[in-house]
Amino acid sequence: MVKVAILGASGGVGQPLSLLLKLSPYVSELALYDIRAAEGIGKDLSHINTNSNCVGYDKDSIESSLTNAQVVLIPAGVPRKPGLTRDDLFKMNAGIVKSLVTAVGNFAPNARILVISNPVNSLVPIAVETLKKMGKFKPGNVMGVTNLDLVRAETFLVDYLMLKDPKVGQEQDKTTMHKKVTVIGGHSGETIIPIITDKSLVFQLDRQYEHFIHRVQFGGDEIVKAKQGAGSATLSMAFAGAKFAEEVLRSFHNEKPETESLSAFVYLPGLKNGKRAQQLVADNSIEYFSLPIVLQNGSIASIDTSILENLSPREEQLVDTAVKELHKNIQKGKSFILDSS
Ligand code: NAD
Ligand code: LMR
Image 1 (tube, helix red, strand yellow):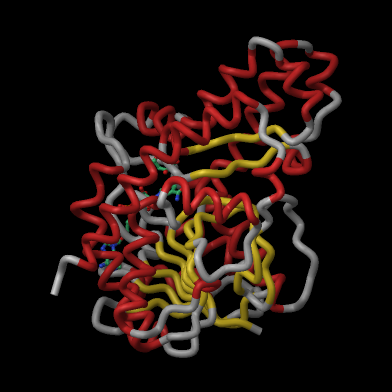
Image 2 (cartoon, protein in one colour):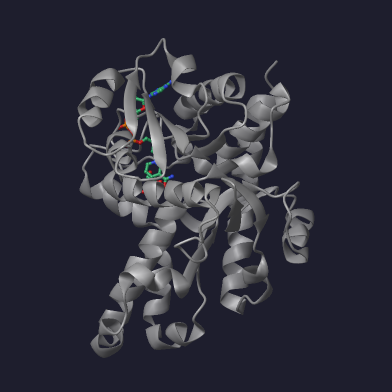
């Protein structure tokens, strides 16, 4: 059984994520940490009659929240408002993630760290460089959570198929579309690259294909706009984050993943990966990319790069555009740690 800690547990993402993980049979202890209100939230959830213990920790108790944690989720930080990009959140969230990951390095050095806070493309490099500096970095243990992009791709693919041809749309099942689509790249705008693995569906989508790509890339903006200043995705993120965490937890028990083509934004050097991924690193000097992962005992055992071998010309174009932006995002994160004393 596994102790899971959530850092930023009182937020819009943190609260429903905590609830969903309180329902998980794979969690034995749930530690909820935040700089505000986490004790009350922990007490509230502790009345739920699932078998895990749930405790909330106040801002001075991060050590207790992390001690013996095997999985740490980080949804702490500021969300977007209309008019902001994820990159605009960097100045607020970089320091928060640096300090939380430092605490993980000190008090739970073997924990798997799942970074939800934005901008994921820069904050994962911050987490990695922070741990490297501390001499605590293990390549398979740090994952940027990009699973909301896959959840969206599954939903929108069916929506657009329905629009194109209701007969084809009705044949689909949104909950199993991960067998037909995956998402790689990064987690912001044009760095998000949906790949339809069942190529017959690209043909079916016809002119809706470009609309589908755009909607997956900019799905986050849709929610920011609809919430009118009250934040960004919270409930759908909690669902996607809990699903992702549950796959990590299942792998502790050698259980087969439920989601095919589950991706995460990862540090490529040091992980077992294919020739095409090595080429991606060499050609573009980018060390991070979201790719399908193979989990073992809670960590990434290898990356499945086969997706990169069979890209269509349009998908290659999407990769080319993505790497340019990703390169900047990654450098920004790395410099934040490497240029500080
Ligand atoms: P929110 O403001 O509702 O919650 C953030 C929480 O973090 C608050 O409870 C706050 O007290 C806490 N916090 C701030 N500093 C902290 C610290 N040093 N230690 C512990 N807790 C701290 O925001 P939200 O809507 O929950 O979003 C949180 C983050 O998740 C944002 O950066 C958002 O962009 C990101 N997000 C990512 C994805 C994704 O797909 N990866 C999806 C949705 C949201
Ligand atoms: C999302 O994709 O919904 C999140 O990254 C939140 C945001 O800022 O859009």
